[in-house]
Length: 251
Image: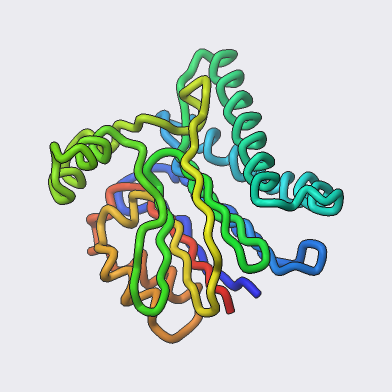
């Protein structure tokens, strides 16, 4: 059984919230399942919000219609699941691109997607929103940022502190809606009892350390309260971006 808590906050300085989140949990063909998404829109005014909401709206329909049908038809292998996810990502990307061309605008969104089926997790990630795993009081980041700063850090040109403070950290090398061919990074693993996943936008993880996230997420109590505490841990007035987080636990 997967339980969760979530917030999607405008922050202290932005005039609108361009983040969108999706949190779904239940049974699919008698199997415990969940779908959790954080999408951080970009593009100015309401354009980023359009891109991120398009992602969550499409995946909501996918969860209700396409996924149960495909699982019921026996397309339930690891490769089948990733193929289904990739096709949806491709379709959503084309939809955002087509809308942008018709309106002569430019917009996009990150995508951090966690699909839980039974005791397995599937991750698709584009951009610089992240998914962490808290297991046995140890936290690890399961995803890899697709940004210029992150690329430079991997190549040894920047350290972690420099990457977080660099203006290049917001320059993405991949996202939804701005590239013709969306190239997501995928991850797969087994879920253990007590695992807690943390899915968040850079408005959250860029302002508190992973160690602090682990301390709050590892406390006793409801996940919704802990999600709120993560947002509140950002010093008042200093949350200069939208901040979204979903906590998911295998109970």
